Image (cartoon, rainbow, N blue to C red):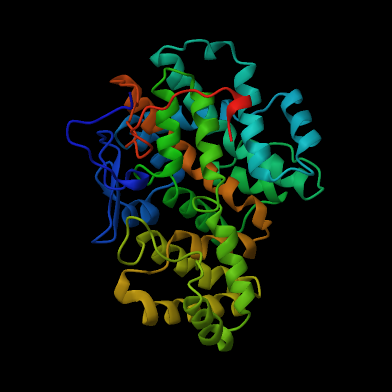
Length: 384
């Protein structure tokens, strides 16, 4: 017999369904707020750095000086990849989409780690920290190989975001690029029970290992309705081409009921606070790199969208400006989503560790809508 509920309730996509309890952070979609462990995102983006925010998410409080030094040292010690991992990236990274390469590499590293066999909580924590440490190295190497360039020798004196930039671009960032990328990673570090975070938690709830959980998260993030939206948002801006075209192109897309990437959000019904912060950097970075037209076109698209659809709660989200920023400093658009993963890895790890400490296997029900009549089996030679 099909599964039944005493009080059947159905929410497509689990929208509005509370599936877990957390102290890590929350999104207030009506007020346009994003909070990590009690800290407003604008406060952290303006005053903190990624290492501090990562520690905050995983450990529950901002580190003191000793805790910060120890955490920073640990991340630097664990950054290095083994030669066979680099070989794998070189083998598949030239032709595969960078997100596919990232998924495969994380799974490969996990397959060679003996701690992944029924890990205890301490081992899950250690695996998580190692993944946080290695993610910028992995994505940096993927970016180099995808572009047909040599992998860069690690510079372990650099901060988390500067190290990632150097690994990916082969040069050290300017002060503006450094602050922009660090801010972007902070803004992407956590965002409630989004699809990739839920995938990560779902996998860890089976008591699988952290590598498997993060591989699930990467697989979910790869989709165009989640992490892949920033690639398509940049493509939209380039399609419009100039501010003068925005009214006509966007108006036509709205008329045809086409999805306009970079706008609207399942949670935010006002302006995404992350987009507000990135928009400021977008103006500065595009001007610095001679791509002002890109920003002005995006700004005009935003004006048109808000005038036409703002009354329906459709505003720019974080994807609208992040792709433009990454493109302006030299990243290929196929690497935009892996950059997302470099930031989100701390949230994935933090939420998985929090959930598994008081674990309950996720096991939702489905509302059966098929035939209720029990059918008799008919041999194949007697069927119409």
